[in-house]
Image (cartoon, rainbow, N blue to C red; front, side, top):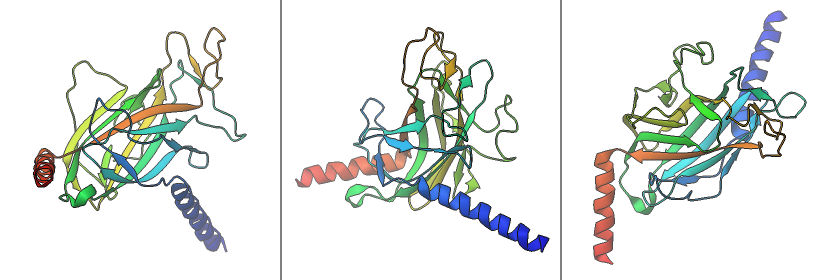
Length: 243
């Protein structure tokens, strides 16, 4: 009897995880590597998943070299009562984020290229990234978790030098992940506060002024491997010449 109860419990947990992931599945999104362009579509709203106590997002992603970034609005974390959790910058408490991107072929029947860079920037002041291996939070991620995985398997990656360290930016490179595969990104968002606002979730700053703390604004730029980018450029030139 106890064995049956254990099996049923496992099944329930699996169904909860599956349902949670499906609930966060977005429509197909288009994104490009143009770091100076405005977002190419309305923001994707990512709900806070209370049973998993994290954000979960699944997106079918199309890379378009002419597109701007993908913009995401991560809903403020919520407690069991449905109200926002108040985070204190003096007590670091990172919130985990699990993202799956099914890479779809590029538009116009372009070559089946691969994504090899990932650029992600936080635009809401007071937040920064935490990634697997951060010595401050050794138990935040499962043992052996990787920032980048392909189809659930850890994938090698390296940070891209970008001048002075900026914890609001996540710039990494890795061996190309070809279209038709799932690119997973595992990380967390950490509230560190600003000089005028140490508490997140109460919708006021330290002086009592009303502010909007309903979401965290993040922009994301996938980048193709250099060879594929050249092939895309040649293909576009060929099309322009034909026209």
